[in-house]
Image 1 (spheres, rainbow, N blue to C red):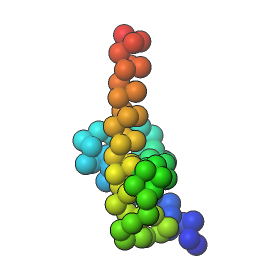
Image 2 (tube, rainbow, N blue to C red; image 1 turned 120 degrees about the vertical axis):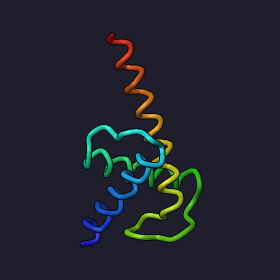
Image 3 (cartoon, rainbow, N blue to C red; image 1 turned 60 degrees about the vertical axis):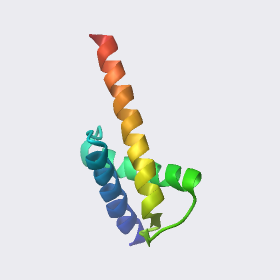
Amino acid sequence: MSWLWALIVGGIIGWLAGIIAGRDVPGGVIGNIIAGFIGGWLGSLILGNWGPEIGSFYIVPALIGAIVLVVIVSLIFRSVGRSRS
């Protein structure tokens, strides 16, 4: 049951990161979950494990990492779209 909780929290973190960054996460709900998981890993790697923990995610580092990831991915997709035009 903990994996289901982690999917839900990862999706919420990815969704919040997209809202805060003002950019859409490619892939919809699945993209939000992936952004939340990778952002959680990236945030804990760079910022450490601190703040409240929900569903095995430390919320503050995971959210910051997900925001960075969403911005980077959206810039990459935007530059690929321009090069095709």
